[in-house]
Structures are given as C-alpha cells and as structure tokens.
Image 1: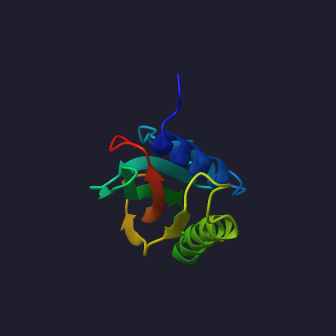
Image 2: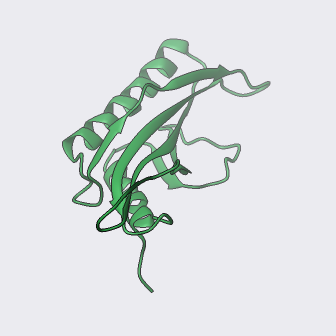
Length: 144
C-alpha cells in the first residue's frame, strides 16, 4: 500500500523533530498526567486546510498546519520558562536546518507559538506552548 504525500510529510517532520535531545517526542498521543522532567513534545497532525488546485497536470498545493504541543512541568518559574524556551528553540533549529524535511515537502517553517501556564493542585506547574509548523507541499490528489 502506497503512503500518501500528507503522511510522508508528517512522518518526515516527526523524524526531524525527534533529533531534539531531551524531551519525550510523541505523535498524536493522548495527554497523560505525567510529563517527563525533560518535557514532552506531542506532534498533532493538524489541519491540511483547503488545497489550491493547479491544472495541467492536475495537482494540489497544501499549506498544512501541524501543531506541536510542547509541555514542561516545574515549580520554579524561571527554570520552567527556560526549559520551554530551550525546547522551542531546538525544534525551530532542526526544522530550519532541514526545511524540505529531506525532500518530503517543498518548505517547512514555524509560526509564532501560543503559551500558557497551568497551576495543578498538589503538583508542579505546567507550562505549555502550541507551536505551529507549516508544511507546504504539492500532492497529486486532494486527499494528499
């Protein structure tokens, strides 16, 4: 069975971000209660959006918005902020170092992250960021 362009792009992004040392890197995982002390990055497949059709030959251009949920858990605010920032910077660095994801996409780049702190009764505070990664690619079908 052939793998579609979308799945190929998603797998390639996962491979690239898996090079970030430290945090646990997962894909489409259900968020549990335990966040490793080094943090967690959960790649969610996101939204492919409405592709633009190009004629002759017919093909489809996507701007696929993948969401990376980056989480750290730490009571000390300065340490928590630094841990999250380090992971975000490392992710951006590995994507920028390989913007075609080894040929799987035409171009991959980050969008500005959204961050949030969440106090947990009886546990360390969680800081999370949603980091969008945009994958631009062309596929032979609207399915991707």
